[in-house]
Image (cartoon, rainbow, N blue to C red):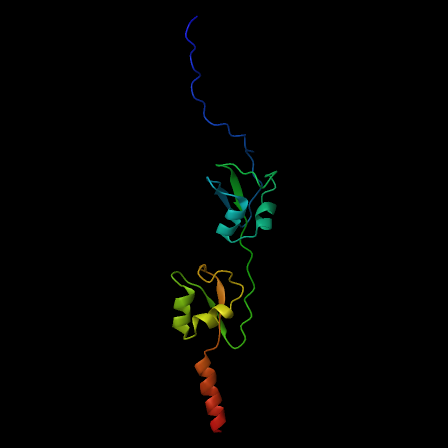
Length: 150
């Protein structure tokens, strides 16, 4: 009996992906990479999971996306400014941290965090986030002291 030849190794099978994508108005096209999920992509681009799924009707099961698949990232939904009584709204710039912003505007870090409950993790803020800078306590004390003297 002749020796049996092994089959040459085959590349992994990837199911075919649709060649057509719906339009992506105002958004951008993203190519899925290893480790991506719709949830992680939505977080990375600052859009809701529902908006990402709605922008990609060609994806039959949002729990199953393939490496190399192209998806539409819709434009982020602008968030309304947080309420900021007595303070003002600041737009986060590159290099900002909550600590540095608190120092810059002379407020305590705790007061800055408390004034911005819409930020789930104060260690993670993004360029373009709009946050409330609360009034400085010493301004209130100075104003109150001035009023008391009158």
